Figure 1 (tube, rainbow, N blue to C red):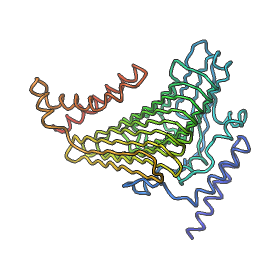
Figure 2 (cartoon, helix red, strand yellow):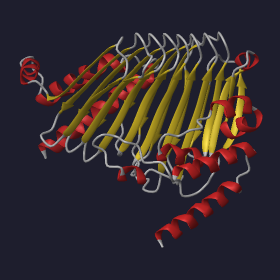
Figure 3 (cartoon, rainbow, N blue to C red):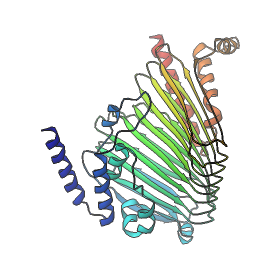
Figure 4 (cartoon, rainbow, N blue to C red):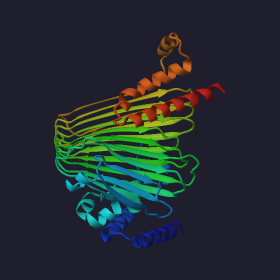
Length: 426
């Protein structure tokens, strides 16, 4: 009986995919992903139950956004999405003339299959990604041609403030060789949205010799658990630097990974996160060294308040033949409540001899000596804690290239800490 119900469900979903008005090759791509999803397992995150991922999968309905592109005389690329109803792309006219492409991913599948069909992920390694490949319902293609140097950051924002039901976003970001650019992705959702499902995959392909500085700031307040995956593939001598600021109020499963395919490629994965109330966050960072003389570094810092739980899993994998690879990782968690729970799991998987690798992990509470020092200067205990937490995060958050966003994060952090202090008193 169970097998029959699953078979009927699978047939219904195939019919849904068949009714989509999109490039034929893309529909076939979706069908294949849905088919292989049945034989794949859920992601394997240490200390995270696999049943967690069942709450993340498959949107309940289809709703594709409308899109408008504005050619501007300004020099900055901006993309603004509101729910599933509005996507606005602001593309400088001069950059379009140079070959920059920014468009709705559905439109890109029709007009630029040379890029989308080649680089869209084809072989998902777990069921969650396979389901995402089958069901994504909004997305972007961003292509930067060879030797392009952007002075101003590309800004990508998604705001969810109504019952959009299910948002399954896929961003495909491709660069040619010798590109330098900065990307800032912000995602926000409002409180009280019980039915909203929000998942997002950012797939970055960095061409040879490119340097990309990428920042992602997530401030999610809706009720359901969300899933984020920032995935980078690096060419020869490419460099990708990620900074993730996870300042959410909902439960979250996230992943940030870099596959260092090209010789001499470099990746830095930095994560800052705050968990409080009964919130649960599980974050996986991965460095996979395939090319020779590659360098990777993971730096994670988390603060937990009240009954929050935070899990950091850091993986450094060096495959056979990746001579001269260097993979380092550090995870630090600060507990500000006796009921807070933190896990920091360093994992090294090494199949080559001629390499360097190391890891560090720590979980602890605020130092009484540091608190005493600040309080002896006239600060209250709550204000002293705020300063210590701010200092714990600052050397990472200070890298944000947009001043207004940095101020906004500082204010959000102070509000969370103040709310926590008031609840502790009451």
